[in-house]
Image (cartoon, rainbow, N blue to C red; front, side, top):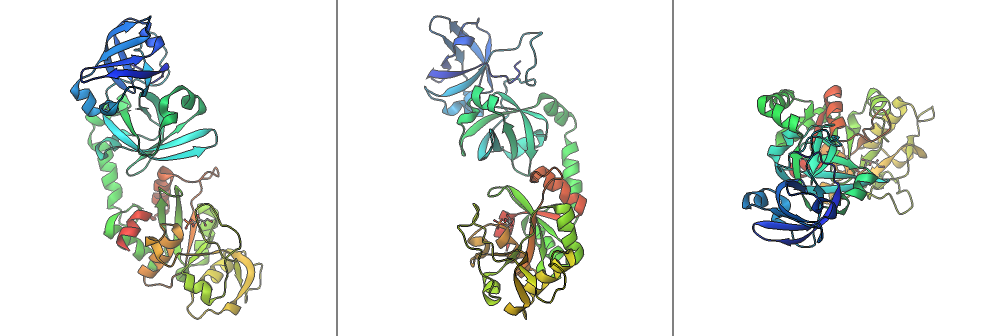
Length: 406
Ligand SMILES: O=C(CO)[C@H](O)[C@H](O)COP(=O)(O)O
């Protein structure tokens, strides 16, 4: 038994069908027993204090079920010797049995920390619990977030320094072992997670939707003046609440400002902005290629243009086919964004998703999108979005699904 507390980083010096030799001074100073290399528990055949080498047995089964199938001399590995009774459980109970190999699909630098997004095989995902434990390449970590097909873990500087996880790149494979308790509970009550998922899926309009049917439901919601949540896991890692501009009510704008809490903007088809003579904001633009245009207010308004009623009226006018350039004051308080002419096929942004959904719902190509922000000021991740979608009664779709079905 191990605990996912890496004691040293070893280097593979030789490997063949049946054995692996690793240079690991600390572990090689001990007696033969067992060893955990990158999360794989192996039997130690011999240790040599003088050469600082340890040799462990390797079976075809182990190689097939873990990343040890591609291990080469020179590969650096996380090394942990087994726990003895009374040792501190510095991480969690790790058996050294790899359940699945996952793939790194995204890495976010978060100041001194780093977030890894890992896509495991589908069968493994029910064993991953947000705020539960997981061993990744033998390192005990807390699961930060779980979404439909992936999960994330946050690596603090100490973990980055003491393990090989700092060396991972997008596309690399990692050994995964779920928390022992979760594994046992899920085996005894196999239908618990499934029944919750199935119950949520029976709600016709709220929570995660997918496929052509999901997109249809979202469009119906939009056409009726309701909102849809769009999750963009791969680009911004943020989710936006979207309304159709032509159907926007003042209460909807109040909801965006007081509940959704991000920065409400107004995605428009480029020809709308050309027709209304609303030009781009000068400058190189933001780091995601969003195209902000000069903010506007309704010229016929009487207030500052900031109230929810005034901003909603400005958006509805932007969406009106009879609107003219003189209908708007520049600069104002409503922020138009230009969608790419090629739509989602050209750029999978919330801007293009909003415009594409408005058009598919049979409405003018102008909408509102606003990022979902948590009450503590951080941006909502996948797990936060799923909860918010259920609480607010909104469909939640991936931008990739829209790209496929619109
Ligand atoms: O308003 C924004 C930035 O200012 C938002 O990020 C909004 O989601 C639209 O941007 P994108 O098309 O890049 O997703």
